Length: 450
Image (tube, rainbow, N blue to C red; front, top):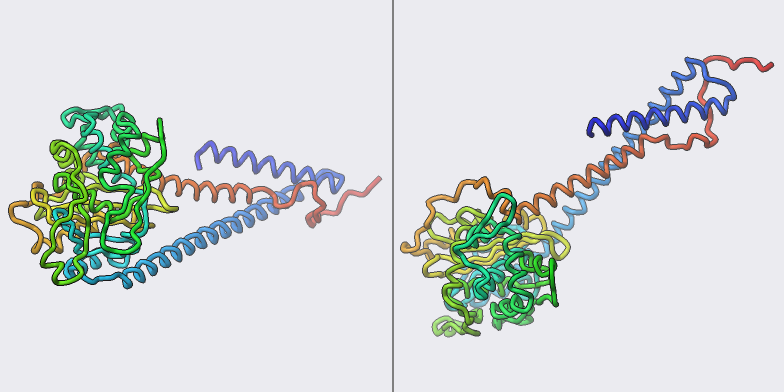
C-alpha cells in the first residue's frame, strides 16, 4: 500500500473507533471512563485483527481453490490431448519424424504438423483431431498474410521504415522479427478489408486443404471490418479460425515460391514410391514479395520473438503467435527450414499454460534439431553462429510479449485488489454501531443515579 493509502486507512479506523465509542456511550447513557475507553478500543482492535485474519484466510482459500481448478482443467486438457494422440491414424506416417515430434511436444497441450514444403507430403501429424478438425485464432501468425498483402499491394516498401512509437521507426524485417502490432495494423488499414480477405483466401485460409483425412475443418474468415477492428484483425487475427494443417500449407507456399500444395499422407508403399506434389494453385504474386518476407521470418528465429526455435546448423524461417482465444491463451509457431532448399515445414499450436513464453517455437526448434542429420543440408548452415543477444529495443517493439506481460500484470493486480478489498471490508466492525449488541464488561461500577 502507498503512504497515502496507509493514512486513509488509519483515518478510517479512527472514525470507526469513534463511532463505536459514541454508540457505547449512548447505550450506557454516560461518558466512558478512561479505563472503559481503553478496554473498548482494545476490544475493537482485537475484533478488527481477527476479522482481517479471517478475511485473509478466506482470500487464500479462494486463491488456492482457483489454482486447484486451473490445475484440474490443465490436467484434463493434457489427458485429452494424450488420449487424442493415442487415437491418431499413423498409417503412412514417417515414424522417425513422428517420434521426434512426440518427444518435442511431450506431455504438453498442443498439436504439431511436419510436412515437406516442396511436395506437400505429410511426415507426421501429432494430435490429428486438433490439427485437422479444430480451428484456432491465428494470433500474430496472421501477420504473414498482412505482410504478403502489403507487399503485393505495394503498401510496404521493405527498404522504408514506419513510425511505431515516439522512439522507433522500423522496417518490415524488424516488424516481423519482433511481431510489432502497430506496424501491421498500419499496413492492414491501408490494404483494406477486401484485399486482406483476398490474400487470405489465396493463401488457403477459409477453405479445406484437401488432405486425405476425414472431417477436415475449413476454418473461418471474418466478416466486414473497418477502422480499428480492421487494424486489430491485421495484427491479432480477430475472428479468423485456422487449422494447423492450413498454416503448414501457408508457410510452405512462402518457402516454395507461392505454390499452395495439397497436403497428403502416402498410406501405402506404392503411394510413397509414386508420390508427387499436387498443386492446388500457384499464387499470383511477384517472387520479390515472397523474398521480402524472408529476412523478417529469419530474424524472428535468430534474434526476435521465435529465438527458441534457433538451430545452430541451419537457418529456420518462422513466425510466432501468442494471444487469448478460445477462452484461454493460445500459442502458435509456423516455420520452414532449411532456408535455401526447404525440406521441412513445422507448425505447432498449444493452449493454456503451454501457450506462453513461445513454447511452440521451442517445440519446433527441437524437432528441427532432432532431424538435422536427415533433413539438414551442409549448404544451408545457419547464418547466425548463435541466437542474438537481447536487443534493448525488443521490450518495446515486441508487442506480442508485451501484451502477454501486461495480461499477467493485470491478473496479478486483480488478485491484489481483491485481497485488499477483502481486507478493507474486514477492517470495518462486523456489526453496525447502532445495532443492539451486548456492551462490554466494565471494570468500574456505574455512577449512581440522582
